[in-house]
Length: 115
Image 1 (tube, rainbow, N blue to C red):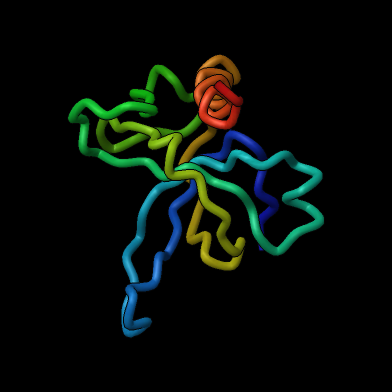
Image 2 (cartoon, one colour):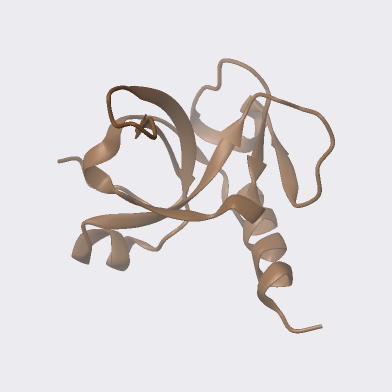
């Protein structure tokens, strides 16, 4: 298994509800490298190519990557954070710049902070 690093953009094989098939979707690795090394899972934020306005989403373009490439401009859906098995990772497709990752974590912290 390839070591996942925080800020990696990966393709995941998501099983359908009936578990008879799956779909490949991109996501950003949010969990830190220590957690990723010690756990079978990792924490991620999904990426969508649907660019319509939505709260708690960040536009991601190839300018936001330090390596790799997105096929199309996309949005990170920060309010959809989830935990997933590292075994479902098909491949790494890129790595997000620190500045962009920090925008995601700022939004996530705002979501978790008491009003």
